[in-house]
Image 1: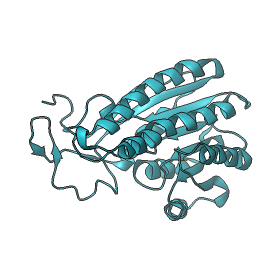
Image 2 (image 1 turned 90 degrees about the horizontal axis):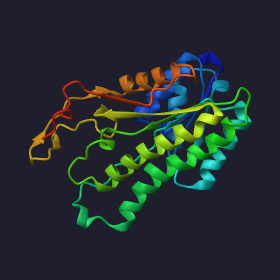
Image 3 (image 1 turned 60 degrees about the horizontal axis):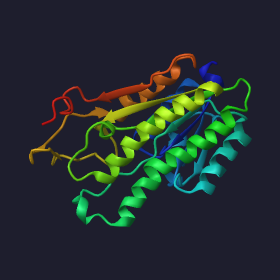
Amino acid sequence: MEANEKVAIITGASSGIGKQTALALLKLGYSVVLAARRAELLEQTVKESGVAASKSLAVTTDVSDPDSVKALFAKTKEAFGRLDLLFNNAGVFSPRDPLEDLTFEQWKTVVDINLTGVFLCTQEAFKIMKAQTPMGGRIINNGSISAHAPRPNSAPYTATKHAVTGLTKSTSLDGRKYDIACGQIDIGNAETERTAGNTAGNPQPNGDIVVEATMTSEQAAQAVVHMDSLPLTSNVQFMTIMGTKMPFIGRA
C-alpha cells in the first residue's frame, strides 16, 4: 500500500516524538489521527503540518480510559474507513522518588497510561485491522531503553516498559493470523519539550550525575517511519535508537 493511502493513529501526538512522527507521516501523505489529552497542542501540530484538513484529525484522548480509546478508534474509522498503523507512543515518567516512598496513586497512574493504555489501543486496532480489506496493519510500541535497563528510582516506569515488551511479543504472535505486524522501538535520550534544558544530567547506578548524549525527536520519528516503510511481510521486531555516546552499552 502506498504511503498516501495509509491511515495512522499516533497517541501522545501533542509533543515530542509523537508530534514529530505525526509531522513526518503527514509529509509523506499519510492520513493521520493525532491523539493526546491536550487539544490545543494537537491543533497546533495540525496547523504546523500545513497539510489539507482532510488528511488529519485531532482527537482529545485519555488512553487510560476505555471509553475514550473506543471513541478514538470509532472516529478514525468514521473519518477514514480503515487503519494501517498504530503508534502506541503516549506515556508518562514516574517520579524520581525512592521505591519505598512512591504512593499507590503514583504507581497506578504510570501503569494505567504506559501499559493499560497500550493494551486498550492495541485491542481496538485489532478489531479494525482484522475486519478491513485488505486485512492487516502494523502496530509499533514505544518501549524505551528502560525496557532493558532501569535508571535509579524508576520502578513504575521501568516495570511498565518491561511489560510493554511482553505485550509487543504477544501482539506480534496473536496478530499473525490477521496480517498484523507488531514491533517495538526502544528510544534513548531523545530531546523533547519535557527534557529540554536538562543540563544537570542524569543519575547513574554508581551515584554519579552525568550529562548524557542525546539525539533529536525528529531522528526518532524517522526510525518509526522506517519501521512502517516495510511491507507487512517484514517486521522490525525490536529497534534500539539512541545518542551514539549515550551511556547505555557499558552502564556501570
